[in-house]
Image (cartoon, rainbow, N blue to C red; front, side, top):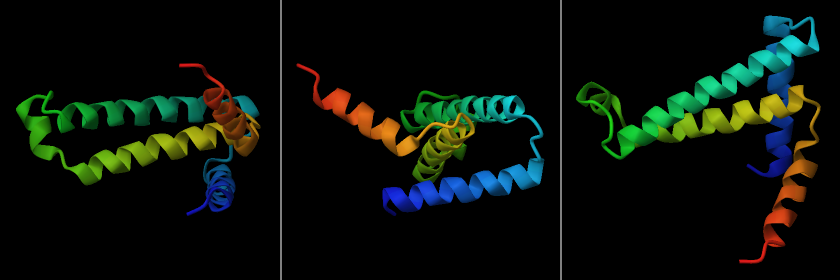
Length: 106
């Protein structure tokens, strides 16, 4: 998948979610997506801990690397959807950030 396909997916998913939940106000959309990013990040943190055997035994029994990758993707996509809700030009923001990182002196 290239970046254009990813952005197209985010637009389509945003439209699907707007129809499903019918956010009447922009603030509610932003808030709900912010909370979703936090929820997904918490789930990713649990999987990271499990992948390093730093969870209790019950959680370790449920862990597999596919679930770790899935939670990572959930955070990634939820973050992109939040960016869309905030009217961020995702491609431009990523390009600008990459240029800032490249310009760092180490």
